[in-house]
Image (cartoon, rainbow over all chains, first blue to last red; front, side, top):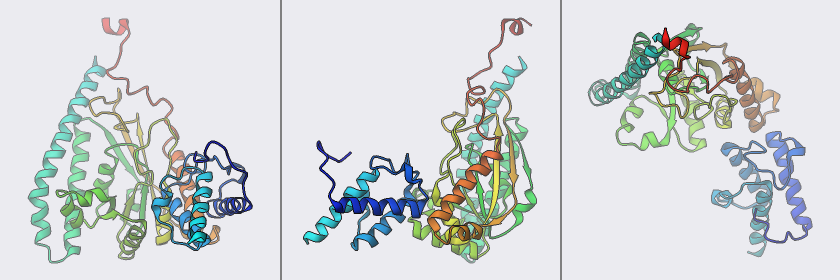
Length: 96
Length: 278
């Protein structure tokens, strides 16, 4: 979705974030590991609904050690979007 | 001929019933309701009076629809509805299932969307009734738990919206999460209506060809603690498993997916030439 015209090679941090998000999806929601892909839709493919999203955001807050506003996840649709959003949050945090 | 007459009769009688319902509800909302509730000495008395009024009015309305021949309905296991402090969980196939259910439930707190509490006309009756607003999840869970602790029962439709006939029953995880967080005892009520009636997108003036028959089956109560224990105390996992359990339970107790969702809603009955000639 928001990958841009060319998907850049994933840095190790992106991989780590993805691995973490993946593990969260498995632990919190018993999502089948095989279903988790970057382009998997949270709602349609993984059955993550609004109440689940709150749990996910709470856990990501712990992970990034930063306050996350719900607006930041407003346009998140896929697992890839989650990873990108977390990465953006971590990046702004590091820069600050 | 008889079937055709029945069809138009049901359409007209349903329209009449809905008109009566609307007019009488608005009238009661500005007369009986304030009269009973404003004179109550505290919120709890007002709540009991408001809920009793709603119960009797909805029961009368249900019987009226049955007497007029719009529907037939029956309740199985109604004696189990007398339990207090349980979370009553029902599927939601029809516009009027909540009316039928409140007609047989003498006292229950409903959960309604926040918009109703923001509406100038609905706000006060909703408060008097002691109904719970679907505000933020945290607030909702706190309110639900407080209601259950006071031995009030709660009525919840976890689907969040009416079932679309022919599609599987799909439960939102929020209701199950609320049950898990509140440590509620669940009392399931399976609502089956054949043929499908007043489902999503079906206007009241296109009733099914046959008279709709509602069967409300009250199941056995069970605690949510079992789901929490099996999920090692992870509430999100427990809630998802409980939701899935409900999806299976309600599918099994409502005849599963309606086999021919469109068969009974095509409009006025059609007849072969032979039938028409006779």
